[in-house]
Structure formats: C-alpha cells, structure tokens
Image (cartoon, rainbow, N blue to C red; front, side, top):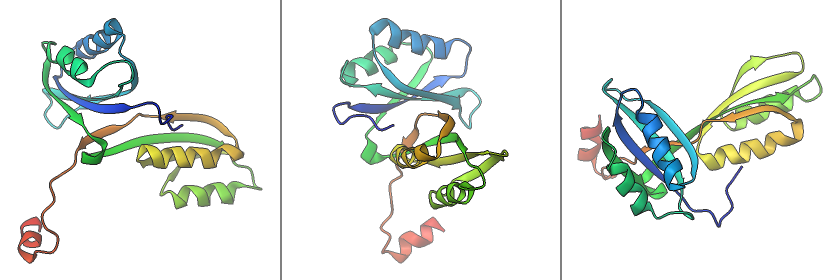
Length: 179
C-alpha cells in the first residue's frame, strides 16, 4: 500500500562486484546502523562482473549523506547513485491471486486489462495476475482488487534507473539522431 505522506524515502542504486557475500555485507551495514529499508531488489547487470542493488531507504531515521558515506566504505561497492524520483524511471512488479468465480471473473479480467496487467494462471475460483508499473499504479491496482478478495499478493519493490536525457523532440535533426 502507499506510504503515509510523513514517510520520505529515496532510491539508492548501488553497483557492486558480483561476488558471494556482497549483499550480506550491504544488508549488514543497514542493520548495524539501524537504517530502515522499505525494499531491496538485486540482480546481475548486463556485465556479469557486476550486480545492481536498488534500495528504497527510510529518510526519517537517517540522513541520505550518512547512508552513502557508509556504503562507500564497503570494499565491493563500485558506484552509488541517489535517484530523485523526478529524475528516475521507476518500476515494480506485482503478482496477485484473486478470488474470481463465474460471477465476477469477467470484472477481474477487465480490471487487469485496464491496468495493462496479464493473467498468468487460472484456477476454478481464482486468477493470478501480473502487473508491472510505477509503485503508485500498483497501489491503485491493489486497492481495486481488494473487494474481490486477495488470496495472495507479492510485490518486488521498486527498481530504478536514472532517467535518460531527452533530445529536443521538435528538432528533425534530433529525431534523425535517435533513429
């Protein structure tokens, strides 16, 4: 669900060497310092030597500068980037199994379609849906699913990359460079 407005979170992406124990060291740092993590996503990058961690950090309990200083001390950390939500492309994955018998199955399928979700599993009295979108889109989708009866729900937490610099869309020369 959506976080209360009083909570401020920032996204921090960390490029680390893809070695055993690195994730444990990062998580241990947060634990030892009492930093609260809202979510953590990690996966290898296109370069097998590195993995990228995306961490949503609670800034009510600690300053962002302190988090970055502590992370920068870890040996296997290659790069750290704080992503301002306005300058980031942020997405999250949701899987939800919802009660959907003959009387409401069509409504559930239609709702999923409105959010560009996909039905990934079908049972006699339930459906499992997948939706990728911004955290606020997933919050809205989840709220609309609740009246149908959520049987199980899992969210990945956000992953994010810095937003790309855009060329002037009006310029034909800039469009030619993009082609």
